[in-house]
Length: 601
Image: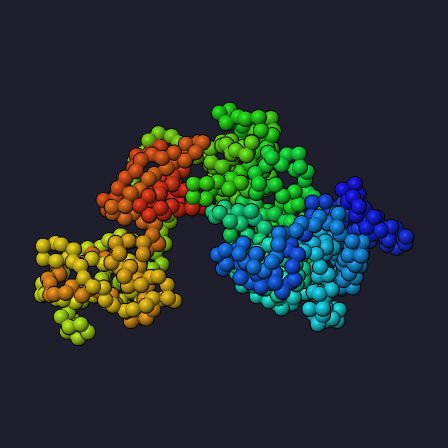
């Protein structure tokens, strides 16, 4: 009430309204729940006509100069209105009445306890979207479904959720939108997983279907996280789904991937981080979420002995997961006596324990792999070992073998009507250059590679060599265009870059050279389309290992073929970077018995 200032009277009106009649005691508790958890919640929006704002949002991501768009539409500066100082009694009472109405009228309502109702039906907002009478609008939009629910004696919240979710507009994937309310979401149908989940929440809660927003701050192997929904069934179990896309019971991204942490957004504050906020990494400062990892993944509590060589005066400790040469903070724990303790941590994930003080991250121990049995395997550098590197990432050979049965031809007529076979590709051993001698020593002006049926070329590099072993040059000829008009055109075959390729638009395709004059072809050298993470000759590679505190560079080497030999500490995490083109894989690897192994192990 003190924080409400001049708006205190509006909040008191709500409490007085529900204090008059003893029959409204539950609604009074609901009002108290909303008001107690109101501080910190606000609307952020532009004070402009909705038509203008909608147009801006539809063009927002593709606009290179966003400020120009804002200025042209005269949207002004973003406005923040805190709920506690601006919300009206009328708005709160209307929200409470409509929430109770659908809770009590829907046949499944009697199975939804008050605490679930307060978190998953009652809240008047979700994020920092502009407030509106979204319950009335959603009820009007889905009135036909609402009426049918009341006639179905065996309808459940999960079945109702499926029916509503199937009717939601499909969201066109876009990004960088500020939080939108129900009307804005329905009008723009743009956004990412966050907007999809929000649209589902507004639509479902308005109909009395208890739905949450669940999320993971970071996937264990990526820089980004993900947001989705869950619906509470009549037994209290939450069933996940992806709003505006995938119905409950069907697989979606959150059911296919491993988790380090899964969280559920709440209206009520779950922990008091205000005093400790600066000692928490920004990604973990959300006090309005609770841990639901056990609903999604096999978990384990982790207890790690406090390492004396990593001691600090920190009160909390955190777990991070890797991405390239960075670590993303995903979970927090406490320091108790002589150990670091973490609860409900996802298994089959690589973690680094860290401290966070003065906005700086320092290691609290060596990285460890939490296996399927909940055991920690630490990676502490040991004695030197020798090993060979053939990849900087796990193999992906999806396109590699499309050159098999492709053929190289020579001709002296431009249309290749007199074509003669030079060589047929019978085998591809791996994502590296293959060299083959040409027995046909006749001279040809035109040379080409002809793709096998339906392979669309999918070749990265081709080189033709002449009588004295010189690399032949000429005018690039062949099938024009590319698959879906991409940049993977025929010129990529001769650009000297092993990571680019020709992906033809036509199933019957070819690529070659006009040499200008007939020449003898002594050999051909070729490389299939590949994922770009192999070892390529003449490229420079830098090997790093985690020394306990940071990624330490060991050595740079120029590859002479598709293998590089290294001497490096055993039992360490490694990352290798192609410094020629900047490529690096998102996860480190280890070496066991001379073999590279990537996570997950």
